[in-house]
Length: 81
Image 1 (cartoon, rainbow, N blue to C red):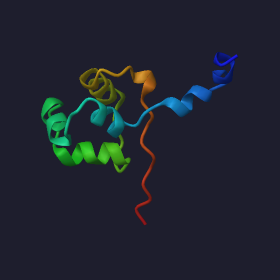
Image 2: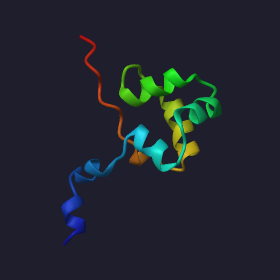
Image 3: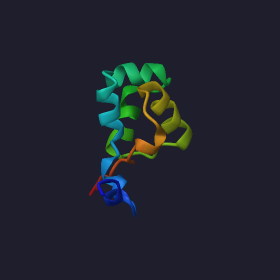
Image 4: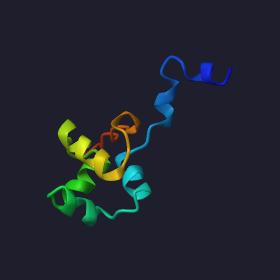
């Protein structure tokens, strides 16, 4: 019965953010930036949704964090008004 509760997209609630995946991997934004050859501000912008991230970069982060891409939730867009 419990597994039936997850049918129809309910598992979406259990996805984690890029930031949560990084924190769970016990990494700082600086460490991630160095590992993926980006600057820290790029990592901040990806995590907060200020700038778009390519699927290739998502895959790199998932590999770095040890998290399947299916468990990553995209960042919420930030209103810059």
